[in-house]
Length: 329
Ligand code: SF4
Image 1 (cartoon, rainbow, N blue to C red):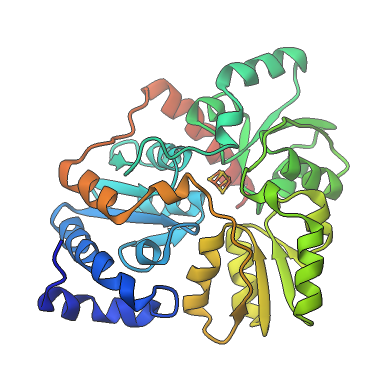
Image 2: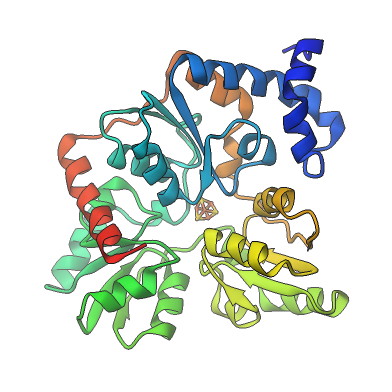
């Protein structure tokens, strides 16, 4: 697509905002797509959701809402849009559909998966329930709708401990993230039966890497996502969900910070916190990176890659999310 003078002028304010995160040489290849997508989404009454791990040109260039997966689904449900485009992975698009069953939900690349979500199926949950009769199932939001439909109550990394404690039971099945389960177990007296799922991005970090970075950056604040292994959590100054990490930076304005999570998040948070120096450990999520501007434009133009689920699954799975929101996000 051609980078015309008209497109240069129209997209200049966006580039000014993200110029620290996107090299100038790349802008002529992004700007025409950003221009077309922003035009088309108005014509089609569509909203574009961008997860915190999307690249800055998507996150800051075309999205109407940018946040974690659940906040995105909740915000999109409040709108009067006819179409939702999820710039994220498959389970996120499903979660958006659960919360907006009458809207058309599109995912620019249907193969954008997640190692946590794909670690477990609805059948696996049914087997666990047979093995531990009467024990409630708490599922992390990073699960398919099929798994959510077998779940008593959903949780996020921000409220997992609160949800587990709220059930008033001695034992829960907590899935699928084994590291998040360990983190929750360290914060509660409830016995946790976990599953062996891991995030292929967060499991790559280790405490040695953090200690090395601390040595060469005295005073740095290290903030980690709870999907990280326990040694990483231990070596960090703060542990929190993606929204918790963003709030930490915004409120504390540390001189230097290392966000132990997917690489693009530092780029995105940098844009809104220009005085903070980000030391970037670069682990990219290959699934998130399947979402690109050309694919977004294509799926919006042709309304392809629609998320379709049975009414029964939508209703059952939505209940587990609604129970969570009643307990408190
Ligand atoms: S970063 Fe990890 S949890 Fe998030 S989508 Fe990628 S694989 Fe899944």
